[in-house]
Length: 392
Image (cartoon, rainbow, N blue to C red; front, side, top):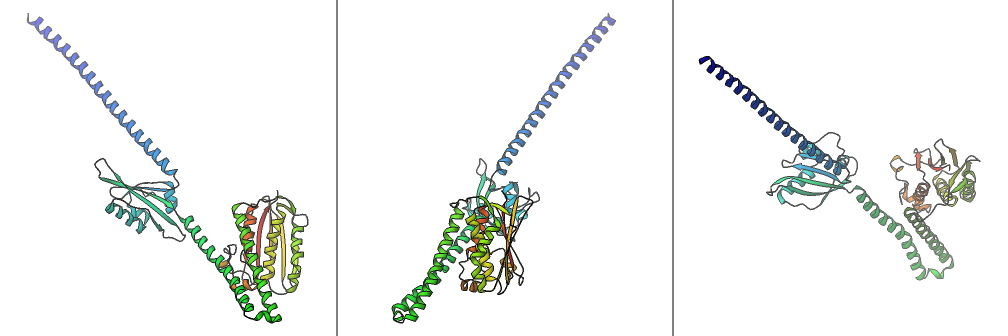
């Protein structure tokens, strides 16, 4: 009996062991599956979070405005591409404080005011540095569901171009007012003198009337030049482009200005190759040559030389130049000579009757042809004005 009972107990123990083993294996498989499921869910959540962050970064990077996102400790969480370019950021500033990342006290002060006042109107300031750079900042808090501040978002607008245009407009109005006021004041003064009795003296009256005519002509030239620049800038002047022989166009200008050159005993030379041509508007090209050669005669030395030259380039363009042997242009003025009303020597320019717009007109006409214009000069050795045109 005992052997049978022992065998029964042993069989039951073995069955229990295998049942427990199968149950343990099933439980372990279930736990493994749950673990894998949790890991898969975490991976999907991480991938979704990374995708959302990448989408946000792509949206921010596509914005023209600079975007800065800060956390609750005013540390940088996100900087878009436009902001990096605006502040010339080369290193990764994520995790840095706003003062460490940008080193702009006005920006740190703005964030501090945002924390204290909770709202912040737009604020404009100039960035420190060698180049002029103005920005306008709009700031807003980032709050959680409980209304607790979790950080801030700042949007930066580049105002540099607007500020420069405003300054250019102000300078333009001031310059035009000054250029108009001077001849008008002289005309008014001579007219008053004539009315007070000078008209009864024929010799004096004639001299005064000649002066009035001179300044009236100057006003006319000034207004015509202003209208020309305005039409060129607005695109109202359409270039009539066709093949033009450059040697012939240069010769026409030399012939027109020969008498003025002879007054100063200046030798005029046409060094443009006889077969050199370009695609251009002949009338506007005449303006370019005329203004450059006239300037060369005005500011060149007596008994000097003014020459026009040209050559074809390998890049499908023609390069032309007008050279004089006058006093030259100081280095600080070479980049500004093409600005409206800019004069290297204001007193001498007025004596020679210039409006201060000739080189600006040259620049606009050349640019309307798709070319470039520049100056090479050394003080005491003259000046060379270059410009390019297309061969076809």
